[in-house]
Image (cartoon, rainbow, N blue to C red; front, side, top):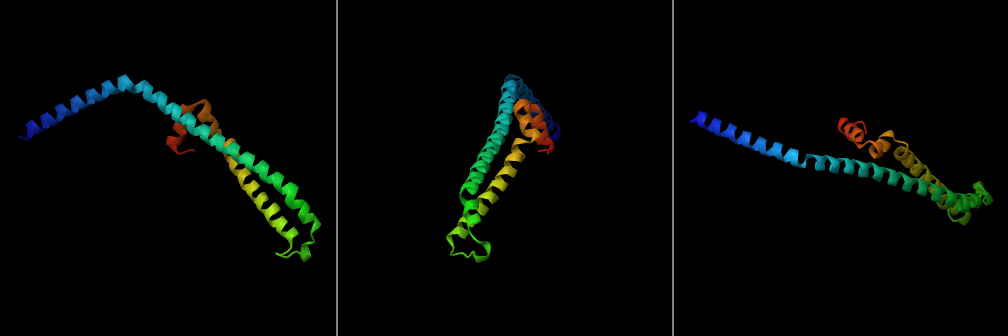
Length: 136
């Protein structure tokens, strides 16, 4: 009885593997192309995020340079209290945007200067291999 069940199971496995081989041959190239397109889109998303961080860096830095730093230069640091509007301009017009610009520039650099991100655009097979091996 067990020999019959084993033979039937092996027959079903052989049929299933033959069907899978047929499907892989039929749809394999389209699946590979779709995977490469997904890898390119993933890398492009990282580049777009890096460019957005670079824009935030420029905007925050310009805001700090135009609003916060001149206000701080006019205020006396020793007399600065939270009620003083010039001191508030320093904190909210200079320190916060400069901190934001620093964080955004680090994020932009990590995305835009990454070799793997550019590999994803120009050689998605290498990018996928790096992702599988955990290098990115």
